[in-house]
Length: 290
Image 1 (cartoon, rainbow, N blue to C red):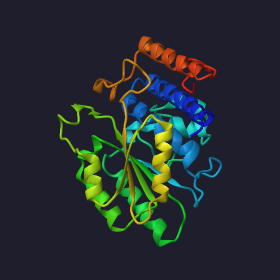
Image 2 (spheres, one colour; image 1 turned 45 degrees about the vertical axis):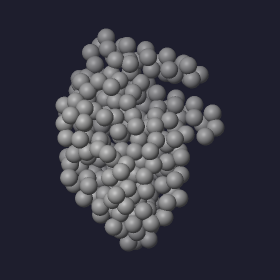
Image 3 (cartoon, rainbow, N blue to C red; image 1 turned 60 degrees about the vertical axis):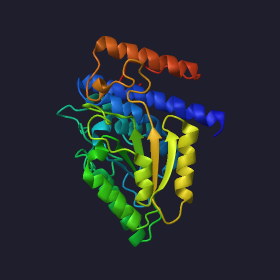
Image 4 (cartoon, helix red, strand yellow; image 1 turned 30 degrees about the vertical axis):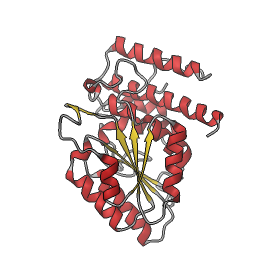
């Protein structure tokens, strides 16, 4: 990946992180930790990898994306707004009663959302169904999903992986946001679903292990998934919960907590500094769509 492309993606991801924090701060609720950890992968998918059209969100030929860990909707909403699916100003209504941007994404109301999710473990099954449909009807679209490591304690996740391998769904690519933490602490201490890569391979998947914050590595994984024939691809992406905000990083307490005004200002200052360091403008500071 050339430097210019990498910097452009990093700048977009930094703006996405500001939007994530703005949503959660405005709502005084939400899930910032896991939203920040998956922001780079979502940025790459929507700004480089996936064939989508914000002007035609239900275009039948589009690639599909399923956020199986639906509680991390702030990340998906931020990316969709940044990509132009709906106005950034709408992000200010996140989780409010009169907004269509609910705590978990709804395909009925949010442009660009391909599947309603929130009940953990079920989204990957929906993605498998989409990929099967694509094969049956000879459609050329690809299906992408993102699951959480804590979510992978759900048995349905493994049933979906078994099904995808059985049907040789090489049009399916699943990203694992492997940040090691869930709401109750370390996944190792709750109900460890590890080792992931070994289990995925045993289920018959093509597996790529990457740093989930390295855009060159994300690109390599996406290209390998496209090149793989006869098997679905699982991208085991090592990430940092709360990535980009120093006091949130690797802290399970930020799984589902909103920052106060002082903490929010500190986070914005850090992200603005990162943007400036990349040669970008700081945008509009504290606004939710920064």
